[in-house]
Image 1: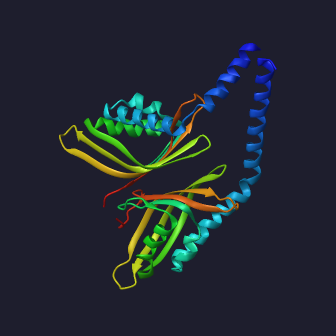
Image 2: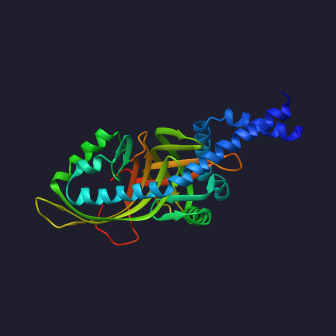
Length: 144
Length: 163
């Protein structure tokens, strides 16, 4: 019983000490690092089980995300830049909303370059393992 | 009070809060979904009748819009100005297909496909619009739902002529 009491108190203290915005930004920094190193396994550690990405195309679920990134990484030889410029951050309960613009610069295996600047809305949600992960992501091209 | 009693009290409090939250979400679902469907209907009507004010009334004061090719538009007033910059000169004939609605307490995700034509009132060929849109709606203090975030992109599942 004493062990259970300690577990409950640790859980309550952990929740009380959470900084959801900082946790979300840490997850996004980790995501950027994994994309820059073309680390598919790493990218997947930051995705919620029921992740949905509204981009071109629509991607629903972890398996589809994994397939998407596998295909994306297969054509790339390196990623020179992947960064997010956050224009707004909001918290509702255990959910964090981020919006802004994302910049990507990579080199394809055929030597051509791939550059994108996208508007994004990101929604990150705490998961049962205690980590906050990418839950919803909507992307639109930022420049015409 | 010993450690065990504190833990039991805290556990009961957590379970009670979660139970109340789950119950309140359950009872509101039908009413909320109906309200969200109504927002879609009002949006279609407002665009097709060129009555932008009816659409602006659905937008939260602290809304953020992210149209493709445009930076973030922050706040209801700025969003209103953006629409008023082109809507008076355009005739919309659009339909909105709701592909999914997810309710999560005080906010909701709506994924939609916008299809139809936009024709300049000064003439010219209609512009075929086919966009995939994600709206985040937030329940306001008065219980109404407002569109809080909106981002959209070309829907490449079908051929279209939009930018």
